[in-house]
Each structure stands twice: as C-alpha cells, then as structure tokens.
Picture 1 (cartoon, rainbow, N blue to C red):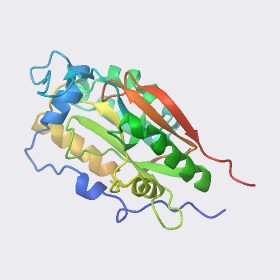
Picture 2 (cartoon, helix red, strand yellow):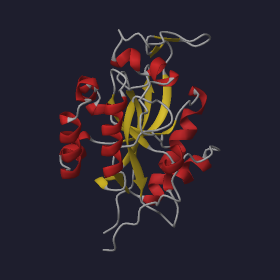
Picture 3 (cartoon, rainbow, N blue to C red):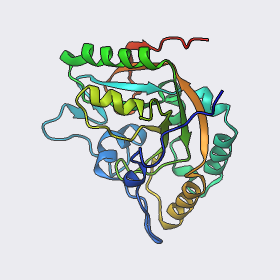
Length: 254
C-alpha cells in the first residue's frame, strides 16, 4: 500500500497563521481569549472580559446555542502516541507548567476536535450535513496527521495541534467541503489542547517557543477520520457541546 500523502505547507495556512515571538516577548491574552476562553479557564482572572455589547454572551457562555461542523479527534490517539507523550512530559516539567489549566484538558477529553465550519444558522444545518455526507461517501475515511504544538495569532492563551489531512485527488478534502458550502477555504484545522490560566512572562514564553520550534515540523499523531459531527454548544471550549448529527464515511472497499 502506498504511503499516505498529506497536504503540505503550501496547501495549508499554518505558516501565515502562527504567532511570531521575539526575544523578550511575553504571551499576553488577546481579547478573543479573554472573552471566550479565560472566563471558563480561570474565572477569577482580572483580564476576564465578562460580556460584550450586543452579544448574548456572559462569562464564557452563550444564551443561544451555536452550531459548528467539526472533525472529532479521539483522546486515545494522543495517549497512544510516543511523540505526544514526550511533549506532554516537557510541558508538565516546564517552568510555565503551573500556568496551564490541566483540569480543563481533562474536562475536554471527550470533545477534542478541529472546527471545519462555524457560525452556522439553524436554517442551514441540513445543507451542511448533506454536504459533509456527500464528501465522506465519496472519499471514505480520511487519514490525517497532527504536527507539533502551534501558537496562533488569534486566541493567544491556547496551544493547538494543527491537522494536516490526506490529499485526495491532489486536494485538501476539507477545503473542497468548505468551497462546496460557499466558504473560503481556511487551511487551518486546529485542535485546541492546552489552555493558559495566567499569562507567561518573557522567560516562560521563551521556553514555550523553544518547545514549539523543536516539535513544529514533526508528526505527533496519525489517525483516520471516519466521521464528522455537527455540534451544538453554548461555549467556545465545547464543554457544553451536544452532538446534533454524526456523519459517517462509507467503508473502504477491500
């Protein structure tokens, strides 16, 4: 069986979406993290933004559920990965380890995912599910790999693992799905994994950046996506997520 060909950096947007830290920089939470994530990670932090004008949002939760089409990632694939184990050990032994909200990671184990489409209106849900079903019926299960930790220009305070999907007919299949729905391809499929409860100082930031640089281009996890899910959630960490629909791939022919 030929080796799987994953999408390369030219097909993805990770290089342009990564945050660049210079010597002496500190990791400071941006407004997105302070509003959507920090109230759930560390509600007593003075940087928390409790509410936003004109939005049904208070202390990290929405009054009305939001919907998203996501790629679920089983926590077991991380537990079974030796490279991930090395990253986890490095994270837990780092100077900044007390500033990671480890308990949030435990609470999210059953809801690890990368978002493909967000901000979906309820009237469009059937169309999104149909498009996802058409893709998976055509492709069957899709192989993916996750590379080393990623620090983005948005939601500073979250540490992600970036997803690189298998190329199908020379294309990113999830970009094909996004285009079929009239959405500009993002090239960013990020699994939010670690969350900071407190901002990092310059020394801690340097240590984290060095860890990220060491692992950036290394494959940490390889797995297969056999289904996509439609989430309804009242928070951006998916702690309250419910699965509205599960779209399964056809079985591959022997």
